[in-house]
Image (cartoon, rainbow, N blue to C red; front, top):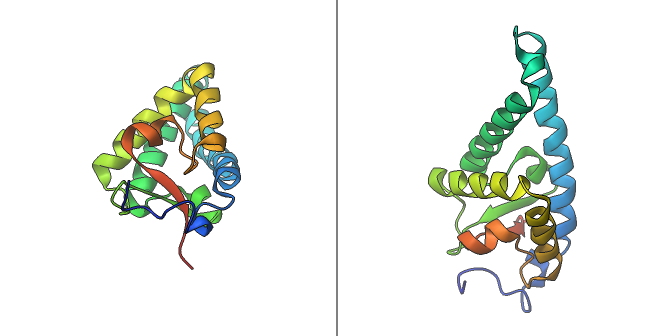
Length: 142
């Protein structure tokens, strides 16, 4: 990961990112729910499969928004973005892998807790998916 900012000499890139990721997650969950609700209400079987609709909307929301600007709307609001191991924004394939990793991590409480714990304890604030893919969330450059 030599292409990413050093957490010791360039700590500003990592300051408060874990908390910002948590707040961004809350914003994104609310936005996904606001997208999901009308879809569920205006389809015949929507209310019966609302968890499946929410999962699908959430997956597409994250994949598309991370593909476009390397951040979800919640992340953009919190002024953070994802970068790959070379310090570049995530492309469509990397965004897909990150979204799949996030979805798998969120499917199990132990993986969720482990990922959150890693974000607080790891040098670069990386969760499980970030560690596997070599990605990192950084404060956006001013």
